[in-house]
Image 1 (cartoon, rainbow, N blue to C red):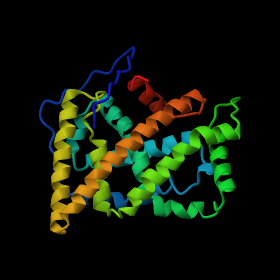
Image 2: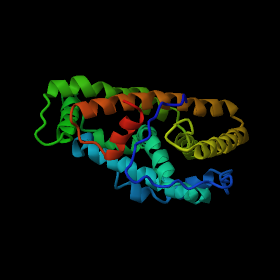
Image 3: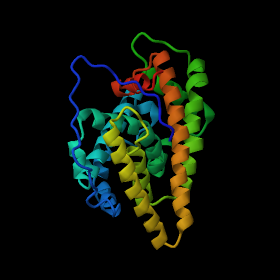
Image 4: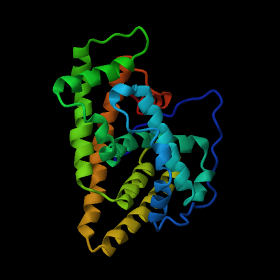
Length: 272
């Protein structure tokens, strides 16, 4: 990923960074299945976040669900990389913010089959458009009005991109839980962002090397090494999705859609 020009947010009372005195190590990261096992045990908790149609929630609800989901993942990963507890709150929050758009896109593929039943009644273009209009209308700040035609013109293309270019093609790859977990961790530990400290950027680089080594060994054991390339190539698709996501954030701000403060900070950090 090409490093982004990110401008740090100035605070009146900045939190002092915690210096990482020694390299953080990955205790059991060589076995991603350890995390997969832990992930399977939190699905009931995640079930409260997903399985609803767009017209049953607001954009802020979706932001909040992603934020909670990312925190669940972080808590699981801390059990195999205990050194993450040494990170400053700034670096931890920045890593999670950077992860939010990537995870919201990846999870749409992971939970695609689970969520499909929620949309079974959407069988016509009229019903689909009505759902989109209701979602964005209910997501606006009070006293803000946007005509349905304008909502569809501005925001429908983003939903089509997320579904047709990302969710469906990724779902079609039929990744197993180990591959999805590896992708999630590769997205989380993206050291190319410059809103994290140099020490944590190095940490991310080292963790990604471990993940890639484990993933390659996993596919080698299955005698399907081309699958490794197919899995890692998905990160390029995720980058396209992340770029599109950030374009949408700008429009959400412009049209007065209520988004989470973390998402607003993403806009500021990327110097938009």
